[in-house]
Length: 272
Length: 250
Image (tube, rainbow over all chains, first blue to last red; front, side, top):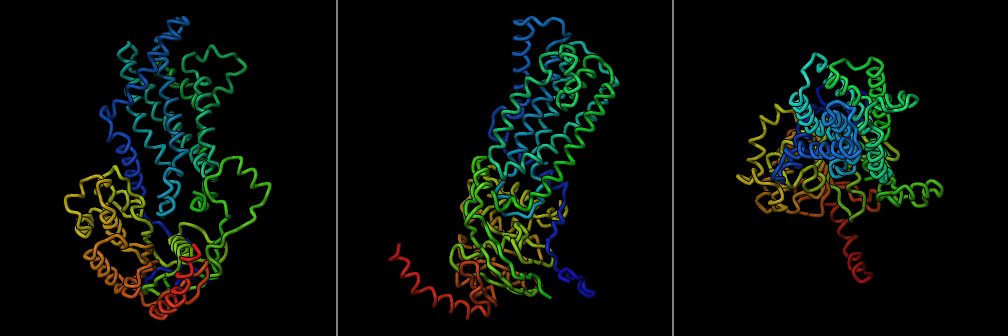
């Protein structure tokens, strides 16, 4: 009865949920640009920071694990390390900004009718800009150190796409939980620290004991690192079992994230 | 046909709403929250298309809660809130704006947040800037603006949405006289197009000029809803002695 359509005119009918009939592409574009501008406007080095950080980390890890600890078995160790660092950096950065997104944008959530899910999704996607720069850096460095361009590079958009989907799902969950339990951001930060060691960044997948390998493949960040090395350093397609697991975990995480977020989003305004 | 309809709407908040750490969560699960604060209690109100409705009342009377509910930003604890068509909220000075970005960039972000498409913004951009009267300041970062200038920008974007219902909270408080008149004129035109304005204000002048009906809210309940003058008189009469008493009570 309440939402019964009115007889015949063009006047909008009463509805319990005012619709947001906006332009999603335009909205995402603006949210991502906003993040980008805020981050870089006041920095003299600007975008260069996206490149400096992984290079410094690569140099340090190469020195410590290559020279000090004496890992000489891994071919092209610096690029191998970078194949681990780039996915890890993206994961850690995107998850933190995704987790904090709703709380950090409290003003917007409380005062604007914008579809809630766009906020964490845009936070993850704005990290993709840095990711692209880092991937370009990685591939340039691979070519410079004697690796060959190969047809399997075409896998890169696919595996990275899955990783982005995975992070979107994860961020939908953590951003919603963070509204109700503000400790979530610290849990996520600690988790990232632990993950640095549990992803094969400075060690090879082969050095992991047999019985743990299956589990490693279920970790999408580890899976992505292995796939990156397959493609960039070994010039071969990622293992099918790896791709399946990556796809399954990513899509499941997104589905769960969507359901969790959707069930909680109407309570956000009252809690932030 | 009504543009906005509240049917027996109540909105309760638990008394502890700030940020909660895990410990507080667990404690509140064990001990049920004792006090619920009723921001709105059993409010029923129908607003016709083309009406201007003013909400008056003390701070904390439930005005902002009613506006948030109308804009669909929060859900009622019980009862039904219905709105016909699109709503543009103008709830706080500069909400959705970022101080480091220029006026121009903030217009784009704000418009897209409210749901304006790229094409519509292209069409309306010049008139938004013109209405705001900000001139060359539009290319300066927002932190260099005065609060009156921020308000001009926010109002210009919201009104350019051409919503069916404009929801406004204490706007025009910081604008100068010229902009006040300019906004008033625009809002009256807006109403003539059959659009609806629901706003909260402490300014009797604005309330008298912009609304035909007013609603006096007190502790989340509707005291009186009716012709503006009548409601303002009742509200004023009830408040004069009370405010004097309030001063001595601290």
